[in-house]
Image 1 (cartoon, one colour):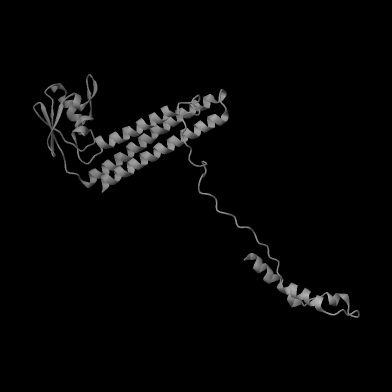
Image 2 (spheres, helix red, strand yellow):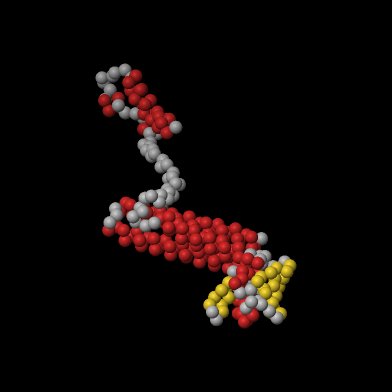
Length: 258
């Protein structure tokens, strides 16, 4: 298309040259007149310069050069990539467990089990101190006959669990009424879910930083290319697990706020 436009713009000059060639030779005519063209024809000639268009940059391999595949067989002398992955997975699993046990709309026996109780002999889960029984979906009982001296500590732990529970003592039994789910309670759980996710991401970042320090120390004995590849794998694991934590938070928030 650009070639055609160029030819069209050059047409007056070509016509002028053709007319000169076709003219009979007149020796009495001055050479400057013979070689001249009409001014309005020359005015039609415009110099045009066409530039090649730049292609769009590839979307793949942005700032970080694209995704890095994890290969645990490379750089084993720098740091244990599989161990780094395992620690990050443990942090992510703890987040999932926290969401199931402590951030559910429906209170379950499992969620009461994990309530931590501070006693004079140390900190114990509630199910180590008493037997938890569901009488009906709106009422749970904690039988404290085996450790009646710990009833005050258990009452305090259940009240402070953040599960919106108000336990009641009757002899050696603690009754735990399950309240109706309110909008305020849903929003409170959603805030706690976000806080738990941020805590998990902090843990993943700490694991990453520790692994990066190990990699930098290895520069004295390992090639820089190997160390750089290991660092990229560590960062890729960090990005992957942070992304998974965000997805889990997103799903939990939808569940709590729907």
